[in-house]
Length: 246
Image (cartoon, rainbow, N blue to C red; front, side, top):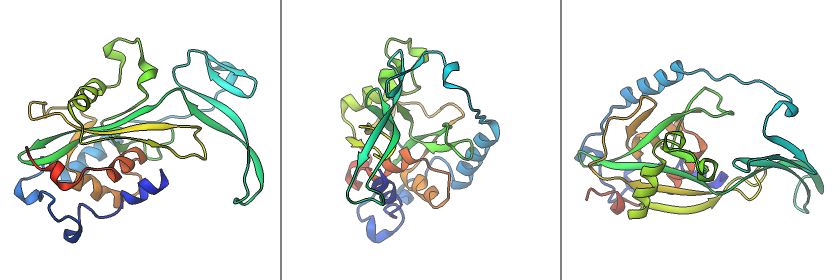
């Protein structure tokens, strides 16, 4: 995960010598200017508020401590398990620590489509528990589908079904990667970029916005703008021929 997020900062969408064959945006215009994207993002940060507070484990319904684990009784989300580690190449020889163990493989994906001949992705202004500045730019979908099994469509993550259907028709990116192993135990995510086609509507909820991969990559130079899931997905992004208008 660390390597992927570093690779995402390489200027593939900036330096001409690294983008030979990439469909240039001057062949068509992005839907929004960079100024408009910053205005949208600033508006999202101003519109939402993130509050955190400590609560005792005993006060959390549906969670129990069993042996060396804190478990979700419904087995929908994750468990926290204690591990003892021994290593010969670290600062200390052994240690004990808690690790978060997801219930199942997650899905991280961008919906994409061509707009005036330029490929765009649908970016989500997303808030999470550890977000420093309320929201960050994230992929269209970030979830563990198993957490929503059996729930009505209205309670499933927005655009998850669109991503699954578009990926089934053929994805530009569809690969499984493991996540950071120092805190997460056997955590994997399926990274997907799927073209939903020109009939997919451009009107989206106010916390979503269409932008080009070049525009999104440009925001990597600023701290706390693009989250780690989006950075990892950018490092997997398809080559120029795959992005060419069809």
